[in-house]
Length: 617
Image (cartoon, rainbow, N blue to C red; front, side, top):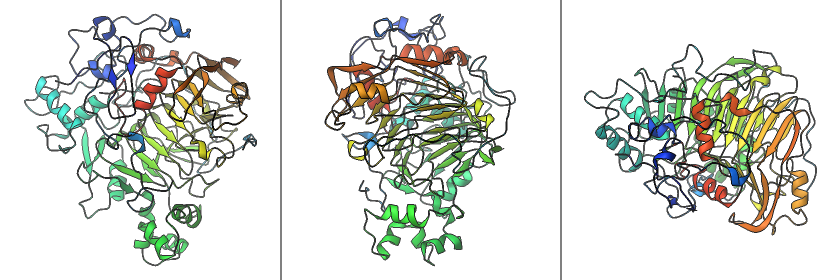
């Protein structure tokens, strides 16, 4: 049987190791708040009352002392689905830039003018906005089931013949498959693609918030396909990925556990290395000196530390080169659990746009447990090397438990009316501009942008604060749409973290900023309160339950050294009105107030290789 998470009934002991230890006991009362991903496995349906009556007002703002008890807050001590570096911070596992080796890794105004910010395709045009309230059922014409179904999306009639997907044999086989590094994806008793994908979807769990309808490569009608990316093939890893993410068929993509047991660079730019213009930009005739950037640097006497910037940010900084983010089609999951690929320099586009109009729309996409390693921020890079860009009115997207490190542009941008997106449990480290929502003041289609950002760790190293020109920002910079941020933790951010423009609306709830007094100099708490969230221009910004606190570099809060950030500008709707009851219940049951417990939980669960969070198994 799969292990049921111990429900939290008291204190918590958390660390940045692979496991989180929980003190508490299971109770029938708290079980009603378990995430649907647990109930749907058939473990608790008879005994716990999954689907019980919800709190009549689960998303109300309350003081810390009035918040409801959090059920299933911390994962039980069990084999983690994906481990980072043994005994260390899983988010700090090696993500090398040079071959297979690990990379070397002031207060001025950050005010940005209004107007266009259109690198990588813009977005005018107007489609029917999807407001942040009303019914949140799946779009007509898709295979996504109702989000309010008590069984959720995992109810396949077609698994392996003779295997009951709710029986003990199936669940035991699934547990072994997702927890044992030595068992490759097709080595278990689960033999059909549908059975394996059902297992992967069950163990990953369900998103909450605006992206709650995303099921990715799982097809409840039995058409799920499993693609295993390997290194033992005549086709490059990059080309295998390009083939797997194309089209709209349901496809759940994983990486061979043995082939990717060690950190392995996946560099999508390599698909352009046969192009003469790319070779000319690099000054070479041999494509091998393009596909291996460290060899290119060695041939030119460029040091290892200077190599990434020289190769990616100098020679390849040309908008006319035929290198672009790979497009992900509809009904796709890219799942990096129990493997160690890292995406070098650039990543993926979900959908496509042209001149600010949707060109290609993708729906139901999941990107999870991947590492993205950039070459450092470069202003207005010609190739617009976002790691994930949702555009073209694409929708039902879940960006979950990934690690983004020193990316050249955004970690995750939302453009040209992309909507119904959940961004959860990611670790965003040393990224100057995390997330642009809407790339032009004039593009009315961006009114339909809706995102939920929760339990992410946004970290700017103290040493990089001045390098970033005074602060990391764009968490998010939003135009016209709306975004709900709750239970995120920020370290090393000091001013203008978000920007609300052109009628956008942001609910900023129970988030926590940490500032190291050894690094901030004269920027005391009073300055931080004034500066962190001041860039409101038009629309609505409601800040509740959020605080800024002094801490050390290990994220330990100083007693009595914090300040309230509460404020309200304009008009902001209740974001929870746009969620299903399942999402509202899960959020209410697992919300934490802005304090040390939130820091410990987020740092233990955010990023690739971290512990499974409340909505995963």
